[in-house]
Amino acid sequence: MRRSHRAIAVIAIAASMSLWVGASFAERNADSRDSQVTFNKDIAPILYRHCVGCHRPGDIAPMSLGTYEEVKGYAALIREKVIAREMPPWHADPRFGQFANDRRLTQQEINKISGWVDQGARQGDPIQLPAVLNEKEKISEPDVVLQMPEEYRLDAKAMDEYVYFRIPTHFKEDKWAQSVVFRPGNRRVVHHAVAFIETPERFAESQRKNQAPPGRSDVWTILDTEISPIELMDGTTRRVKLDAPVQDNGCLSPDEDAGGGFGSNEILSVYAPGREADVWPAGTARRIPAGSNIILQMHYSKASVGAEKDRTSVAIGMARTPVENMVGTRGIHNEMFLIPPGAENRTVTACWTFQRDVRLISLMPHMHVRGNSMRYEAIYPGGRKETLLSVPRYSFHWQTLYELKAPLPIPAGTRVMVTATYDNSAHNPHNPDPSRAVRNGSATYDEMMIGFVNYTVPKPLDRRVMRIEPALYDAYAGEYELSPGASVKVLRKGDKLFAETEGQLVELFPVSEASFIIKARDSQLTFVKDSEGRVVELVIAFSDKLLHFKRTG
Image (tube, rainbow, N blue to C red; front, top):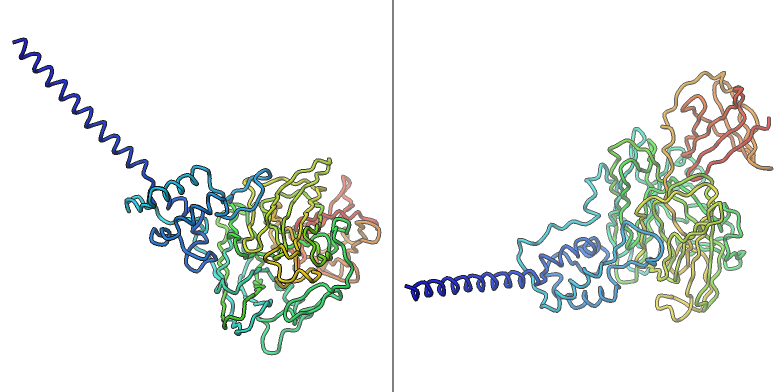
């Protein structure tokens, strides 16, 4: 009987052991399967997040990385590039600023890609393959797509030219754009593009200044526009003359000079290689006034490898929630620099002082092929200095819009300094000619120095003109001075109010009893009264400017 009990016990223990061993083996097998890195489970999500926005058919990258079949032939090269942190491209110094669109891979993601290649680059279970989704495809369907009026044909010769296309919007009321996506028709030849907003008043002004070629007003080149006395034409591009005055340190120039800044609520969006689409959060948008046209400035650049054609379009998504903040753009630039022949590390600066409180949302350096580095610094009213962005290895072939993780408040009086360096030496492999001096110009073989800054300001009053009693205008008529030599005269003529400055007379349209607009510009003029009801000041808000004119008469 005891033997029988012992036998039963041994059998039970043996059975338990076999179950444990079997379970342990199964668990180890499962662990082993989980530790196997596969494309579908591990690598595809990384590529979809960081790479396929550009590595897809018809985009700027040289190959598509959307499927296992497309990726496997490049597996070793991908491993090499991500370990060296050459891909995905990201040129900002990580010590300064935090950016929402930081493309850098984490060390864990790099390890996964490396391990996948080391394990034989297996495909894995197709069920584990995620849907392709990247930032560009998170944008909702556009409300309107505006396309060039017709295909533009480029002949077989090498060229570097600017062409402008006017596209009517036919908007019957002001619209607020929350997303703008450029759709280049031919990325082989579209070097960059800018979409400008042309109001009806601006269109009339443009027609007076620049007569379009006979028979059409929707396509023209720089040859059909005004040229500055310090510039010369080169085909359909222009550059600063070699003997024009030189100012490398643009911070010594007044803000409005060529060494300072240009501001525009007229820029809708920009396309450049590597730059992502403009998508602003709910409540933030750009205004497109009723009746506006969109002007596409297309910079075409190609080698002599055959004829090409292009028909670019712009897809716009409108705001679906109330707009609280208006997007504006400031270009902090220097046009008067000169880079000597062979100069290996030439420094050029430009500065701009914000005249009203703004919130910075993104930064975009822009130079051409000799551009080496660019740094943005803010000098606050109290003297504190902060580096906003540093790009020590600028790439003309990959121009990034650096989107701040959170809007940065910039108080009025803050001076933003942009410092760029250029390499015009033979050591620069992209330099077309180290033997020539280089000035500012629109062609790729010339140079530019622009530190773009996108910001928001509170949305101004709606541009709905209202009727007010013309007798109120008598209280506003008078002289207003910003500084000696800078003044505005306000006049009533019948039942209309006008502002006169530097001999120009513009009509003011009321949007409230005390606030007025100028239809040609996205500006607002407000008359301020003291405690006794007397008008003592005229405040003009335009983009990032807030000008206080004191009443003098």
